[in-house]
Length: 479
Image (cartoon, rainbow, N blue to C red; front, side):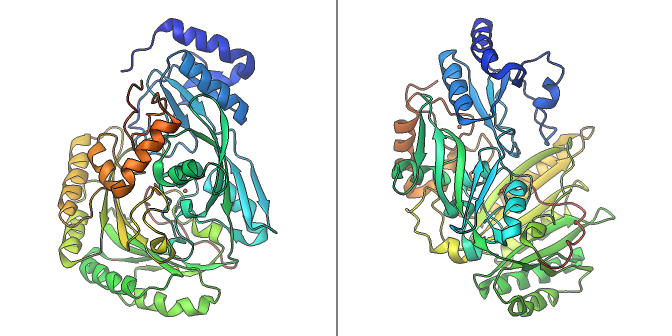
């Protein structure tokens, strides 16, 4: 537990209360428990105070107060991180959840969002113009957090990661200065933001390239567990021939009776949806579908497929591996994990990385892994009254078994706080440059709540048809 001096907290309250009023929350306030509650019930942290900011000026003030009062700092935007790094024990939380404005410029083909906007906020605003963003799979995820470390999603093959579509960002730095990062404005910060995580400042505004997409061919196909080996091997073959327009998730979800089911979830985003029917037919032919809900959908409804997949208050632990492909040994590990699953809530998801995302140079953004691969997401879930031991052990055993078939490192948005050894491997040749950026923009190590980088030396861290019914449970969408 972080030790924070009471006089420092009192001084911070005195500095912030005149500006924030009752938007400054402290323990003992009637709404404090609700303010610091996250969807993952396993997160149990009590910040010293929460600054619910409404604009970048308030964010800058809160950053200056935190540093001046020697308070640990964290940022809550979407608050979707499974490890709860949005909440700093004994620290000051910059809560951006009230900053959710979205501006759409159809003529320019851009969407600009405030730092607390979610995938749902952005897609709802863009939908009347038939515009979409490259997002993650879950609507509740904050766009800023999704983007800063990557942003895998259903449009990855055609439009790249979320971070590949970031045109500019407004950032509050550790000293309270407000700057703009883009190709022509602080290009080095712009490079580092696209993959470096929440370690360089507080992003209060983001401008994205938008894409015209009136509808996609998408949905869920479910198979029985005993068909899993054939389905996953066939899935591998479909991916090998997939065009940019086809991105396909797969994995295991709990069925109505609690036994895992195999799922494949295609999204075909080409202009002629009929051209995607052959690919969907190939996925249907992988086994005998128990559920087949693929059809034309507005992209906003594609991201609704996993709504309701997480139950607020349940306990979650995630593990992740990057797989270069699905060889027979990796398929065996995944099927064995599904057969040994310990909870009727747990899941395994495979996110497809290819196409446009793979054609970005490995040094062009801080996100370095630009070869075709699968992001494996192992999601252990249990109720608050369960013994966590078996569920944690299942996730750890599955991750360890996948390690022999995995690439070095792992997706920083999903790595556990203690997996710092894998962080360096994740950035590869970009790590040293990213570390220099950290030292330049945050020399005193103010932002350390999201440990994708170590503290600096001397320093104190998502048309047509109706949406399919949601599956029984869904991946976390860590993006």
